[in-house]
Amino acid sequence: MNVYEINNLPELIRDNSYVGRGIVIGKTPDGKKACVAYFIMGRSNNSRNRVFVENGDEVIIHPFDASKVEDPSLIIYSPIRKYKNYLIATNGNQTDTVYDGLVAGKSFAESLKSREFEPDAPNFTPRISGILEFANGDFSYEMSILKSADADGTACNRYTYSYTALAGLGHFIHTYICDGNPIPTFCGEPERVAIDNDISKFTGSLWEALNEENKISLYVRYIDLESGEIENRMINKNK
Image 1 (cartoon, rainbow, N blue to C red):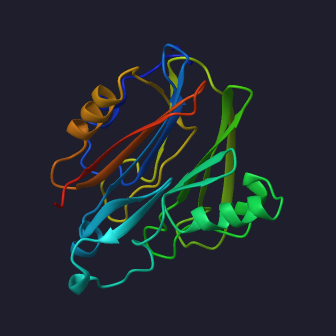
Image 2: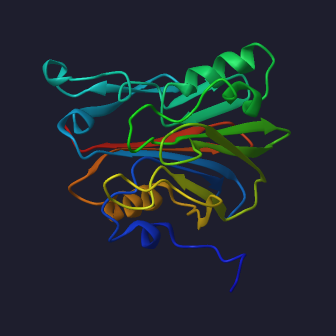
């Protein structure tokens, strides 16, 4: 067993009908750019009624058809926000919790201590989060998952992973292992995945691998570590 194996991301998710929401953070093989990607999937009409919208450095999830919104509390949020030299990516409104925590001088992990998994029994969907910190022409990153300690949602376990950015390597965390009822929660450490130098190729291969019926939206951002120049790709199934 090679514990340092770097997986092909599309191959990890292809033929898996429901990995839920996912965050990828890493560095391109040439060492020149940071990569962050976020995607959402959905099984219900309420979940599928969504699109990503860019608003400056921020990405916001909007309802595609506002008249069909059933419960906005867990589906409408900002998955991507920037604060000073930090970039935050999460699968829920804990984006704002981390942002407010940074403003107050708290760390990523400290900010998330006030949150727990989503109140959607029996699934108890975990809250997954990531943060990039840019400094001296490079970056480091952290990932977090807040998940139920048992099948009854009686307590929350909190896991935080800290990484040095290495060329060609990324980490991938997602909410679910696969489809089910209840849906089985992601287990273990974030998965080691390859990052491509070409943002269009990376975006296209990831979108193509996501289950056609359940995928909703994908957003990918590459940041040039020397110039700070940003390049984005966004795909919405609802047009």
